[in-house]
Amino acid sequence: MQIACVQLYPLEVPMDRPIRMAGETLTHAHTLLARVIDESGREGWGEASAAPLMTGETLESIAASAHYLAGRMAGQDIAGPADIAPRFDAILYGNPSARSCLETALMDLLAQRAGLPLHRMLRAGETRGRVERLEMLHMLASGELEGELAEAQRLRAQGFRQWKIKVGAGDLASDLRRVKALSQALAGDVVSADANQMLAFDAALAIAREGGASGLVFLEQPLRAGRLADMAELHRLSGMPLCADESIQDAGDIQAHHAAGAAQGASLKLIKLGGVQALTEAGRLCLAQGMRVNLACKVAETTISAAATAHVGFALGEVAWGFSMSNRYLAEDVCSVPLAPREGAVFIDQVERPGLGFAPDAQRLRGFASASLPVRELRG
Image (tube, rainbow, N blue to C red):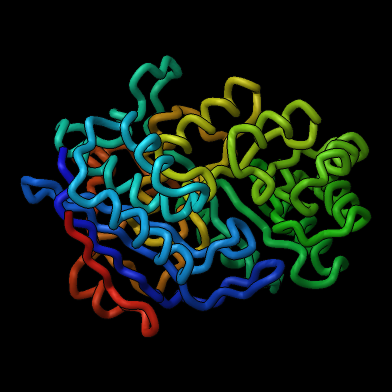
């Protein structure tokens, strides 16, 4: 396959409503879409959203790195999936978000050329049983308990059974009330809490103990990345399973957390691992070590990343801690027919077209174009 052209689209897409997280409140998705066109005119799409507190990359830096990488890939031949990472390594160190954006687009193209849905290409050699649905994990992030209870009950009636309570942005007493009330109201579901690294140890222990008594299933990234010994001690004192997110950037981090007893599961994202192949490999490593997997998009990304992450979930065959698909929090998607949950899940029949199975609408790309960053086109 020859790369004839790469186009880069920096976007600012408004959220349906602000998402309040520990450390930031999001009103827009700042995301980069890549369109890679092969010699026969087929096009593949990839996406990477800015996450300065997770990957250290802003939209400006992702766009610059992707431009550098794409400019040196345009005109080159790609033999197959195994050829992508070595080519990238020879051009650019690190920068996982930019690499993920372009790797996903290339994999979309390769799967289309093979006539396969991407998950079937990624699944090659996998012996774990196939799953028909990925359970959707919904964020409860307003910080207003009554509204969150009403929101959860409304979505529960639609089939949702996995939840993430955002904690660490307000006072501890409020977080403890929310964790207790929501866990009890959603008894029998998979209810988690996510602090995005923003808790002191004593606060994390209080939430873990309250959650353990109320039915919380796991606590995600309560402490700053790198505090493996403290994470292990938190698990020992509370018995609460811990999910590592910001502290997982590569396979070595997964192995280190497992060895230290610092995490019993991991939240895995395309922008951290560098693409769909690396994300699939990381998920398989977790499962091989008995760790549970949460697959997540950054808040917020469009259907392009949502579909790519869903394909990885179906390739893995086991995503016990849920699938966080964040295009649901956008006021409008870039795709005219976005990937959307049915009965609280994404089903495999929704991603059975060749490649990703989704592409953005050109008019919507223009409407969400960044005011400060240009669209770029690179040819061989």
